[in-house]
Image (cartoon, rainbow, N blue to C red):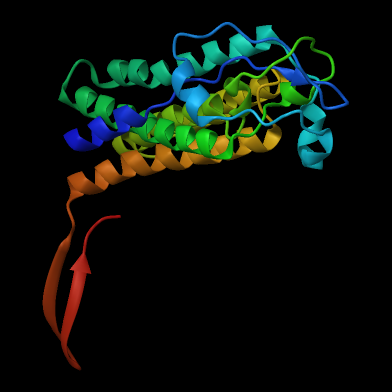
Length: 253
């Protein structure tokens, strides 16, 4: 577990930052946003290479409707919401089990969930280098060439929110049995962040859909793998049968 944490910590990603826009003719336009504390300009400059002006026609038809949205207020709301969603599972767990060994175990599970999710988001962003919707908008002035404008795919805010809240829901279900409320909270809050990212002009619909799916899968997988490890690998038995000898495996999924 220790080596996994060290590797994933090295791969953890920064939240998306403000980006720019382009005009109808493809001329890059917009203004650079102020760097956030999690920005890593040196890494972005060396790995991500701005490649616009880009025509709107290169954007799939189902993604084009968000071009033109660019609300900084909604952008801030989405960042605050995503941040609270990443802290909320620990608060819920602390209320549930108190300051105990189970809480520390759950803390590790949630931390690993976010680290794995962050590593996948970072890999996708730096590999795909997709321009954000603001790059295609004709409404924003000035020239933008910031590498931060080319990390649209996929949404880290959406993915992190779904990963954290799904891990919380999965942990609660494994401990207390079936319960509907954690999953409803996950769906409502996660969808809210996804919509906020669209209206902030930071992501296309396909970015938040993939982000939601990826975060949900990670949020399900990490707690499940920990639960499987605690249950053990199961037992293998050899038993007689009418045809001879039967090999049987018994365990919990």
